[in-house]
Image: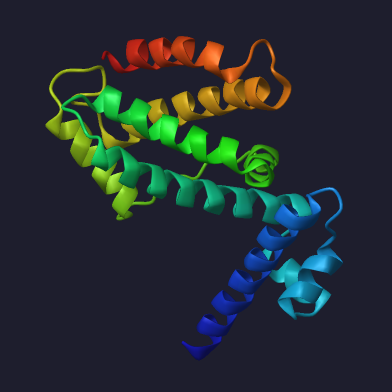
Length: 192
């Protein structure tokens, strides 16, 4: 038990160090050696938990996005409507707004390229499923948890890709012009 706790602490220290360095120096300028030095662990310890820098980048990115989603969910809860689809769009807008306000975090999430998987028993995933089940109609009503996950995951991935290109490069247009199009696609996919 004590050994497992030590392992968890080392992995958490590596992830925290990577997160801080990726935000401060940027991903390209951060090395595995920088991460292990910041975490105060031997360089070999890194490879017990991660294959390479890209692996820890993905893990850190997913953790950061999970935290953003949880904060966005709290903001959505304050403006809740009776429509699952509209609530989901509010959540999405909250996350997008937070990313636009923090460019280094936005770049980290974009470069990491991993969306967090819903964890059984997590408060966020449980709340989203409960919201969905309480909302009338819609394309996802009556679907299994796995089917709901697939649909929401695909919509999130699509939205993140389009939003990233629009926000970071203005391609094909700025985000404010593409946002209504994305919202209509999401509404159509969710039957709302």
